[in-house]
Amino acid sequence: MASSRLRVDWPSCEGRGLCHELLPELISLDRWGFPVIGGEVPEELLPAARRTVAGCPRLALRLV
Image (cartoon, rainbow, N blue to C red):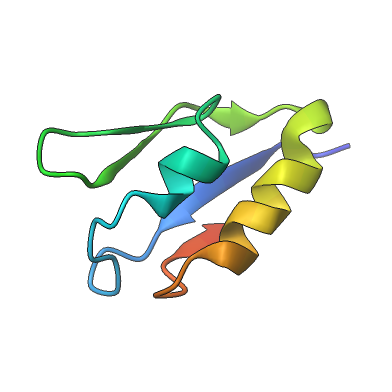
């Protein structure tokens, strides 16, 4: 299976931090509250990554 990664649409992101709350295993926050993505999404975290993408209030995350 091909690897998946999370991507941020920076113009849409407002740095609310919900993505970090939903997926702290892969997403940390910089000092301004914007997401820092920690690499490829492991197979076991794909369902959580999909929920995180769907839960972003600004639709600023994509799973590619």
